[in-house]
Length: 294
Length: 225
Ligand SMILES: Nc1ncnc2c1ncn2[C@@H]1O[C@H](COP(=O)(O)OP(=O)(O)O)[C@@H](O)[C@H]1O
Ligand SMILES: [Mg+2]
Image (tube, rainbow over all chains, first blue to last red; front, side, top):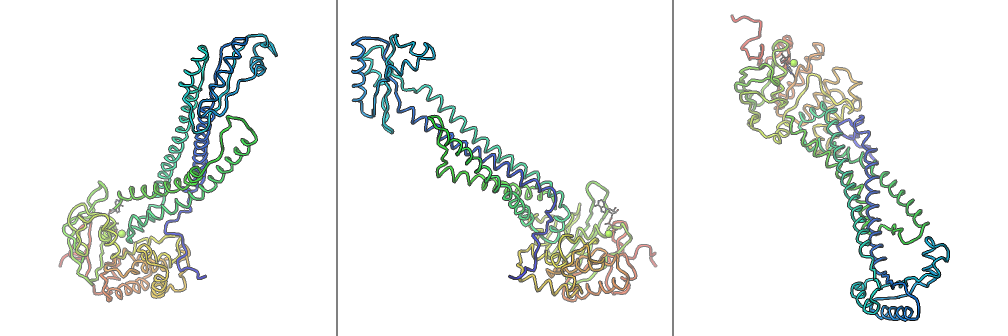
C-alpha cells in the first residue's frame, strides 16, 4: 500500500494531558450506566414474574372448626373452586402441613390437637384472570366466615416498589450521561484554551469553525470509544457473573436474568449513546466558544 | 482590492494605536510598509489579514466591507489572503510539507491533489529535500521559506508578510523579496512590512510610511525639503 502523502492525524496536537483522562471517565460512566440499565431490565422481569406468579395464586381460608360439618364445607368449597373457569387446581393444604407451618409458635406437633383453619391453595391459568371478588362471594355464600385472598394489596405494593426502582435506574442512566456530557464539555473547553495558538493559525489560513470542531469531535469520539468498549465489556462480565450466581440459587423470588431482545439492544445502545453524546458535546462546545473569536 | 478609510484600531480598551489610516491598494500592486518599531506595522497587517477588527473606519477587502461581513463569510475571504507571520507560526508537530499542505487540507482537498502542488512549491522555495523535517530541525531561513510556501499554496490574491527578512542576512532578505516580486508578477498583490531601509531602497516600489500610528507622506525622521 502507498504511504499517504499527509500522515498526520490532524493539525491540532492532541497528545496532551487534557484528554487523557477521558477514556477512563467514559469507561466508568458506560460501566455504571450499562449496569443500571441491566438492573432496570432485570427489575422489570422480576416485577412481571411477581405479578404473574401471584396473580394466579389465590388462597381460600375456612375458619377453624372440627367435625363432619367442616369436612363437608371444605369439600363443597373445593368442588366450587374447581368448577370456576380458569382455575387449574384447588387443593386443600393437608392438616399436617398446617401443623408444620404453625410449629414455630406451638412447637413441633404442638398444634396437632388444636382446631385449625383449613387452607385451600388455588392456582389459576396464565392469562385467564379469575375474578377474586366474585369468587369470594361464591365462597362466602357457602361458608360465611371464609376468607379469599387474591394477594392484590401486597402485590400492588411490591409492583410499585419494583417500578419505582426501575425508574430510579433510568434516572441514574440519564444522570450518568449528563455528567459525561458536562465533563466532555469542560475537557473540550480546556483543550481549546491549550491549543489557542494553533486554532488562531487555522482560522487565519481560512479554516471554518466546523473544520476545527470536527478535529475536536473526532478526537473526542476516539477517546470515548476507547473507554466505552471496555466499560461495556466489564458491565457484560458483571452481568454474566450475576447470571451464573443467580442460576445457582433457585426459588420464586429470584427474577429472570435474561435481557431479552430489547434488553440487548438497549445495552449495546448505552455505549453508543454515550459516545454520541460525548462527540456532540465536544462539537457544540467548540462551535459555541469559537463564535466569540474573530 | 484593499481599501482603508479613516481606520482606527485599539487593542481592547487600550489607547488607539492606529489613527485615521486611509489608503488604497489596486490589484497587482506591491507595497512596502515601513516605519520605526512600535509604529503599528504589525497591527495594520493584522487588520488586513482579518485577525482583528478596526475600532472605527471602513475596511474593504475584495469589495467586501469587513465591518458588516458576517463571521461565517470570513473564512472565504481569508483563503484569498496569504500571510507570512513575523514569527512564522508553523505548527511544530507537523512536517514542512504538512504545514504547507494545511491551507489546502482545510479546504477539503485530498491527498493526491495536494501531493504535486506541495512538492512543487517546496522545490520552488528550495526545500525539496527538507519536506519531512519538523520545524524544530529547520533553520530560521528554512522556516521562513516553509511559511512563505504555506502562504502562497492557495494562490492568494493578496500576500501579506510581516518582517519576513527580520532575522535573515541582507542577501537572503533580498532573495526573499525577489521571491515576492516573482509572485507579484503572477498577479498577487503584495504588502511587505519591514523596517529595513536598505532593502526598500533596492526596489522601486511605493512605501506606506507609518509613524506613531499614522500614515505619513515620507520616511519618518526625514524633514520636508
Ligand atoms: N496584542 C497587543 N495588545 C496590546 N497592545 C499591542 C499589542 N500588539 C501591539 N501592541 C502595541 O501596539 C503598538 C504598535 O505595535 P505593532 O503593531 O507591533 O508595531 P510594529 O509592528 O510597527 O513594531 C505598540 O505600542 C505595541 O505595544
Ligand atoms: Mg511588528
